[in-house]
Length: 201
Image 1 (cartoon, rainbow, N blue to C red):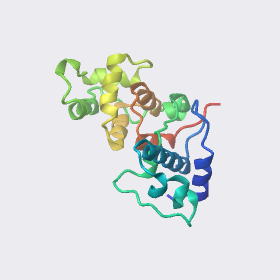
Image 2 (spheres, one colour):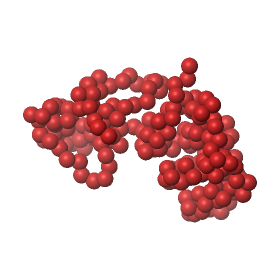
Image 3 (cartoon, rainbow, N blue to C red):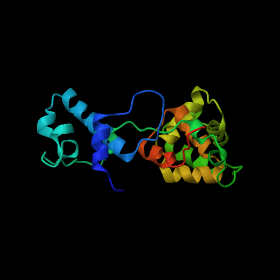
Image 4 (tube, rainbow, N blue to C red):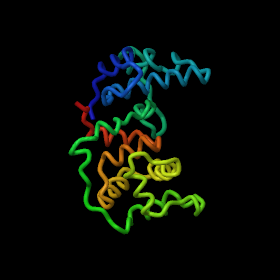
């Protein structure tokens, strides 16, 4: 994915206003927000953003005459920004509500998700596969359903969630609503789903 460095710099100095979700963030906006967050984290930790080459003191924002900085570790810069997933309303359309595949009456993918991601949960707090399925499709999950959803969504890979959608007959709208209900928005998950979001009329 190519990056427009000037767009990153513009977004760094002119961030979008806080408030309701208005637009799907671009890659450049996520990079700029990640850089602003690293700058704040450095100051909060008693560091020196000038010495670290953060923000306008580094080449990404300040220009090629500033020092280059290499991020260590496996976390990309954009993942320091808030993960931003479009609201469920942006998937409340025929494409977003289309069911993937067909519904498995035995809920084998739900059974596998419970075994994989809720193994340490006391047996009395674990759902049945049918109960977990119902948590994904209900409009307003209750507190226990949100707990189940969070346990699964916060750990499951995108591939696993895609397979779950297909084999359980879930729509993107079902999945996005469940993610927001559970408070389990993740960077990669948001980037994947935002590709299919459509601003409501």
